[in-house]
View (cartoon, helix red, strand yellow):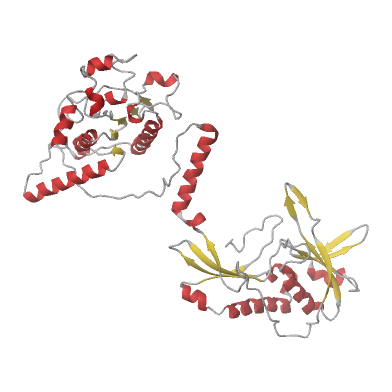
Length: 481
């Protein structure tokens, strides 16, 4: 639209104009609209007088766009001054008989019509009214009256209308009529001009155009996700469970806090102790207010306290940890309420083995799944002490974090799609050929990836009844504390 030298598509008309965008609403309201219109009219009149319009009649079809954009509301007020609208060949000469039809450019009028007795001109007309021509004809008639008004009394005008309806091209709705021209050959004064478009109420005023649907990033993202979900549910995943809420326009808040960790003392002073208590309270509050907790920290010990808090509050945890070219993404076991646990009087291992088809490595129900610390040999401590810089932080291949993060989100979605949610039986690598438990596929306990050989495995492990993070005794002690 802003490329002056851009090519005009087939069967389309170039229409050049000027955009006046004011900086303030007051400037938009107080700008001299009559002066703008008169300036545009004088420019058209000058090309008519000079004869330049005969070479390129599209310059007769200028427009003015007066706007004020309210960026905060993504709304624009616009006034349209459409002096014309045009086509690739907007105006032409026409000569026809019962046997033939001839066309020629405007500049050949004297040679095309030597006697100037019967002249027919054509206009590419965008108007759809059955008995009225469109705006492009007005300036064209002024051009003819200025150049040949003294020689022409009446001329025939063909408003050529080229439409496509239901795949069929038709020009049957074109109209033809006669026009009596005034003599403007001796006039050097620009005629009075009109052209400001009325608003929706039919009064002279600005039109309001809401651009939020096509400019607001939030609206665009919401529309994109909504369309993607609808297309997924159309034929690919017909039974996908989706709540069509404002999932894009969710409130996101950031918090700057230090998570107390095993092996990292905080009892240096009353101030540090008070800060640690405040951070723990804030962390507990955040976990209690959310349904899923993602653990994406860099050290093992930093994951311990959030795991303890989430286990005591029975929140779903999705954990992601990185190596250099390996990663693990896992969901922690979701403990059942105490009322359900009290009904199971037998020990954990006995109760688990009594499940139909259960074993140590397959068909483990969600409330029996282990957490990140269940397989630890020693309790979590300071893993950064006496280590070099590359050992203190995770040095990994550039794409590993994105892969693990994406799998963590997809694992959460698969868990939520399962009828049992966090209590879903863990899928393993052996289940890849079986019928998936959800419309989105498997619901594994862990996804362990090896980027060096581009391979993933889906192991599952039992919860440890003496785990330092999720065992019942730790959860009970933390709750009492």
